[in-house]
Amino acid sequence: MTPTVRFAPSPTGNIHIGNVRTALFNWLYAQKAGGRFILRFDDTDVERSKAEYADGIARDLAWLGVTPDRVERQSARVARYEEAAATLRAAGLLYPCFETPDELDRRRKRRRARGMPPVYDRSALLLSDEEKAAFEEEGRKPHWRFLLPNFESDPQVPVKTEVAWDDLCRGLQSVDLASLSDPVLIRGDGTYLYTLPSIVDDIDMAVSHVIRGEDHVANTGVQIAIFKALDAIPPAFAHHNLLTTSSGEGLSKRSGALSVASLREAGYEPMTVASLAVLIGTSHAVEPVATMAELAERFDLGSVSRSPAAFDPADLDGLNAKLLHHMDYAQVAQALSDAGVEDDRARAFWEAVCGNIAKLGEVPDWWRVVDGPVEPVIAAEDAEMVAQARDLLPDEPWDETTWKSWTTAVKDATGRKGRGLFMPLRKALTGLDHGPELARLLPLIGRRNSLARLS
Ligand code: GLU
Image 1 (cartoon, rainbow, N blue to C red):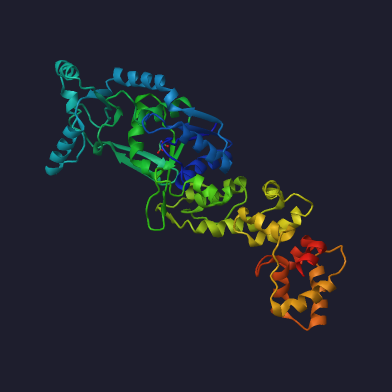
Image 2 (image 1 turned 90 degrees about the horizontal axis):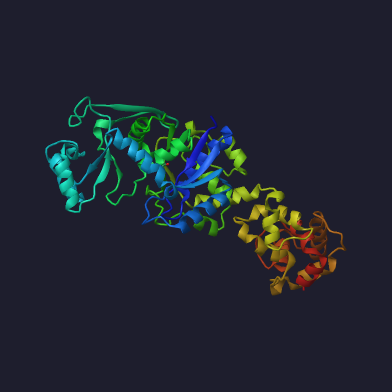
């Protein structure tokens, strides 16, 4: 069976770096295993799901280099969920309940007060057909619960029922079904909660590995029970730790904090975001990895730590700078050309500036330093020396040795040395007091520009 994974966001907001972690864990797993990656929109919540969010998620994934083999929307598959619900109803495993949220709340409180677990007491199972009909006549619409297999013969008497799985991130896990309420699968308005559609899709789409955040661990026991009730073999599960900010706060899709869109707009490279999202909270060092293929090499579910992974968004800056520093010209050629750097100096320009930029967005600034216009900065006390330097500029062709031979000549002629020699020349040539090595920049600036700036 081809390993098949899915990333299943609800399109109710923009995805953030924590969602990227889940998406990439799935993507890298598929890459490594020669498997398939499904992007599945869990959009059964019609009120909150929006097409623009789904489009945004697809765009964010594409930016990261994730290209799904298949895209599905739960909203288009409701007929399949109806079939599965009918199967469960026919088996007596899906039953109608009429309690209002207030009633349920009161009962939960009562159970708590008596020291009992606040789980649903299954009183709807005791309703006679007449009582159900009476509720319907009153206009109450039932919601439907799945009968958990946690009893011997009497559903009113749950007994300890451990459901266990070997989690690919967390090791052996188990959930006692007696500690849980029968889950609601269908709301009073007939819409589906995420649980049943997710399982039906995982079965229909032959999902072999469910890789998701550890906020779903508790659901897994219930889901395994439903897979079995539908006569299906449950997939393998992996629940990874969640990302938090350095102050320990969780990330929320709705808050927009650290959304992929905002990171993209802030000018970070996709591989910076991907490297941090994948490597933080694992036994690997967090460092920028140049390509998805290399990240796949490093990635393994077993290296994921059990505790939440706190990260400082400011770390992205250092990672991005480091990534660019080691980035080959071929990888940035297009971006450089988009920024207007497209003549035969492009490669040498990149090699000169890549160690000095934190984001690709700074490229035009440095290109302006090379190609102009530059406002030279020449202090009165340096004017004489700069003018002499101008006269000593050699003829072209220039290369990386030109700076050294020229400044040696200037030093001999003016007696200036060290900072007193180099800084006035830098400021005159670039208008700045900092920047890439002038030995590399000077041949790019060229004699004509240099002559103009040194006067
Ligand atoms: N829509 C669910 C979520 O975003 C998917 C969970 C799962 O992967 O099963 O949390």
